Image (cartoon, rainbow, N blue to C red):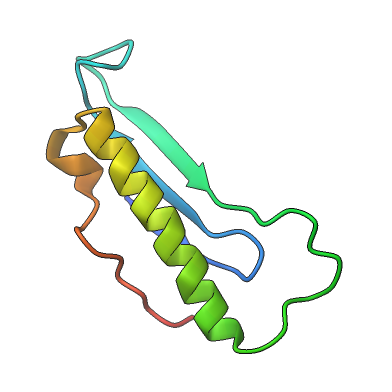
Length: 90
């Protein structure tokens, strides 16, 4: 089954999954699957305000970090990640 890049965002844990082929990784001939999650710790109560805006903000942070990591690792085609996050409402 082929690996598919995707991102998921909730008000508590946005995450991005992508595949990376790079000479900087232990097996440069193979593909390494990478998971990046962003978590806000110490959230004593449920989030308040515009939950959709919060999800989009967290997803943007997760995407930005993932893209930076893909570039730093020199993943082929930046791990398939777009230059900007694609925010699709759930």
